[in-house]
Image (cartoon, rainbow over all chains, first blue to last red; front, side, top):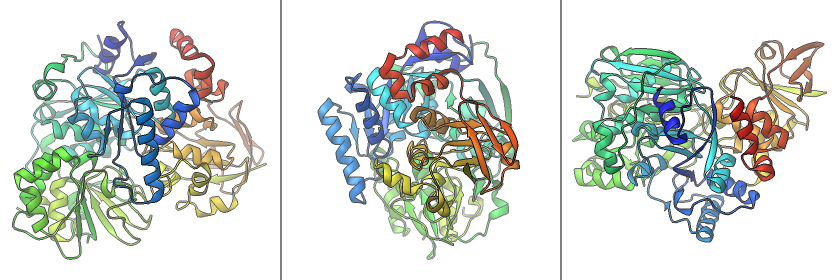
Length: 409
Length: 168
């Protein structure tokens, strides 16, 4: 009996656990990437212990890939040397961790996964309890296969009704951030449900769970169903809330949501697009672990087909993974993007973190489909970052200013 | 006495150490990157034993452990905040950077104030006024007693956490 989070922990531990309990749990796998991985390796080495399981340790090269500085190259070398020494074979340089782990089958319904990256909450879209930890915690997992959790209370969010055309999971998530505030779900699990969520394909659910950490949640979760089964196949597990007791419940009317924009300088400074339409843009970034998937690129391609991006707006498009890139090639999206004048870059985190692929200068406005608009996130603290959906991003790239996708059709 | 560096609400790990400054494990590089854009005067003026006082949700965003490391490498005695983002708080405890939750101090204190910090008692005194904060408890307290998460695991594996888990 319990919330989805409580059910997952109870299954794993073989006894009933409740929110508030402190538990030590085995994890399915531990992720670290090219920036957090080296510190995790150092923490592991300080333990002077053998590696727990070489097949359950995953490294991704995505945050600075390919290396753009000698320092980055040396971090990559350090990870490769560690992997060679310990027989770790899951090294991926083909996209963002939070897409690659889903594609490679590391994420299973009812499982528990930890990653040295805050957006590890993304995996909850498959009904897996997943959360971000620091490098030292991950280094300890490398040695023990376990970590400790305080089983979280749950905020249940029911998204009722049907989303209007041009409104997506990104808008739902930003709308919830607007209601909850940047720390509104601190230490809690968020369970996403309701008709609008049930109707969402996996890509959209990944967006919801990805952004859950950006209003403080420890995990974002969607109850496994037929959509989950289609992805998980034989690894499907029918885990669901049983007579759950929620710390709070939020009901959202999907039909009333306008395209949302999170405005500099905070994720919870969210406005209806009508408030900010017309803001000139110097850069548009379409990609990231929030919105760099095939469904996202399909929306963008539909808008950019037979159009050009505005002269003043450099438009950077980064598929989340090689798999997404190949599918987008097959579908003709990449051709559309390049002909529209966009810059299509290699799979990875792209300019989201302000270290590569489109760093912004003071006084510039950038609209991004990613998840963070903190001052300095994408370059100069003097740049203004707006976060929105792929539909808004594509319409805005064409208009050269923030634009309502309804007007681009 | 410790000098107070006062910061606002929602200070992200991007502000504490931007993504252009944390592509490294070198502790001295991290030290120099601390608040380099958000508070350029911090690096110039900070002395070991100084204290950061912040508002709500300190350390939100990226899980980068480089953020508490950068603060610790500057010799900061404690970060006192109205609230902390979950991952930052856990990271700080894991590496032995003292963190104190205290609601009331932030409104009272001014940047540049002298403060006396008693980390063990989670108490801060500024201009004769004493503020009682909330020290870590539960598993976090066990980690602090061991000095760091690595220290705790090296000493006794998960035994200390098992003790706490049986209490809860």
